[in-house]
Amino acid sequence: AQKVTQAQTEISVVEKEDVTLDCVYETRDTTYYLFWYKQPPSGELVFLIRRNSFDEQNEISGRYSWNFQKSTSSFNFTITASQVVDSAVYFCALSEAVTGNQFYFGTGTSLTVIP
Amino acid sequence: DVKVTQSSRYLVKRTGEKVFLECVQDMDHENMFWYRQDPGLGLRLIYFSYDVKMKEKGDIPEGYSVSREKKERFSLILESASTNQTSMYLCASSLVPQYQETQYFGPGTRLLVL
Image (cartoon, rainbow over all chains, first blue to last red; front, side, top):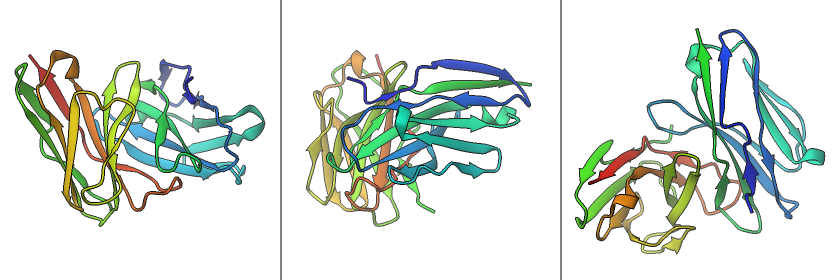
């Protein structure tokens, strides 16, 4: 079974629109971390954020914000006022204390921001 | 800043060739990983290593082997390349082998096997 589900395969938005990328995870562990990465066309995965299972506070970093809800096992990512440079594939990942340092990645969401 | 480099950005090989993909990190990280990325499948772990000369199989190790002779270098070897190994290969490293550690990625190698 997929531990991390990113149901949105591709999203297109017009520049300056807000967009939310969904991430739903599955784990029996009470201690885990969630991550978001950005993969621009150049190919390198760039780390965006890490959140542990005991911290449900929302995080904001500039135009980026993350909403972690344990009740729905979701860790969604919102880009406000999207820009062309936000066009990339975004990956959500899970690591669990019980399985050590192995990451479980979602299949990614490809975001295209149209100028 | 963590720097993970991979020896080639693009590689074209023929079926049956032995292929070496090299990865080097400069932050004294203990953990290193090899993934392959395919459309619709996300990233899948091939092998990882938590110390020199140590290796662990990931989810899809068949057809691959690895070598870690020095802490900073982790090599992925395709003993006899096949067309179904055409893919994007990503190397990553993390400080220590613990679940909370962030993985840092290299730029990737796009391998085409003809």
